[in-house]
Amino acid sequence: MGIKNLTQTIKKNSPGSITHENLYKLSGKRVAVDASLILYQQLLNRSGIFRNKEGKITNHITGTFYKIMNYISLNIELIFIFDGKPPENKAECIIERKKKSEKAKELSKTAETKEEKEKYEKSSLRLTHEMINDVKKLLNLLGISYIHPQVGEGEAFASELCKMGFVDYVLTEDMDTMAYGCPKLIRNCTDKTVKRNNDIVSIFDYNSIITNLEISEEKFLDFCILCGCDYCDAPPKVGNITALKLVKNFDGIEDIIKNTKYDYPENYLSNFNKAKENFKIFQNNINIDELDIVKSDLDINKLNDYLLNEVGMSDKRVQNALKKFHNNYK
Image 1 (tube, helix red, strand yellow):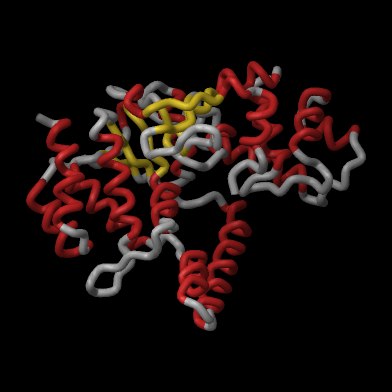
Image 2 (cartoon, helix red, strand yellow):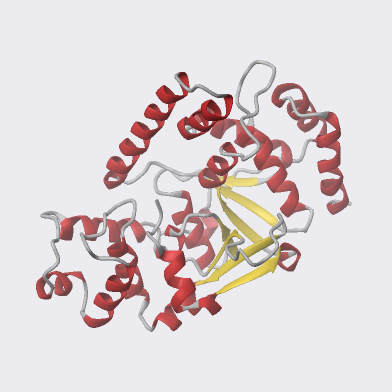
């Protein structure tokens, strides 16, 4: 879910915090990739569901391959960060997503048209361990680094790496990343007036956001949780405008609950504080010198074999994409 309506709040109150840049301007930079989000995004490819000759879905592999090629061709270093074990208080959110997936799967069985069937099939797709391992194999063959923490969300770990200066940006569509205090977030272009292509991205600047909202980092985190997130639903009738006023006018969540008459759920304070702990899970808790980074050497021959024979991509598409890769590593 991310932080409910956070992008709209930033656009309204801090429009200068979002810039729209051509990726070539990031040449020479290092970017941490929220792997699970990017993989799921590729699964929902607008062009449809792709399968290899055995019938296995391959969107997550082909889509990730093309995305990597786009960045690598511009001399942008990538490091993928996978999700570890999710926090306990995200269990309800995960169960709800599973229910929606199962419902969509059932609806796909009774769909009357091909388009309707594909729509429900897409909605039913969930990222599996097998899919994650598929992409890890792709990364190993490409010589792209990745980290798979034991616990915590990938965007949380990536955000902390960015705060520590180990990476320059975090690539994800998940606005939770702002709640983690990520200094620089890369998303697909959010400006509908800008001609969109794969090379134009939107960059969110955290320090600019909190400066323009005129709140501290701590109050910004309180604001994000009040708006509603995966760990804690927003109180009834508390939207983003109200949430921003509350964090500005009161000193912390206990003060807000004590002095306002909104209908806070019975366990709201406890859920709020647990959510806050989750957003601080890696704060000052990562040792750069002890990062468990997995990195293999590039193997073009095995990469070709994997993409052509296991994934089922066409030779022409693979070679055209790899030309960018070769040109960058001459």
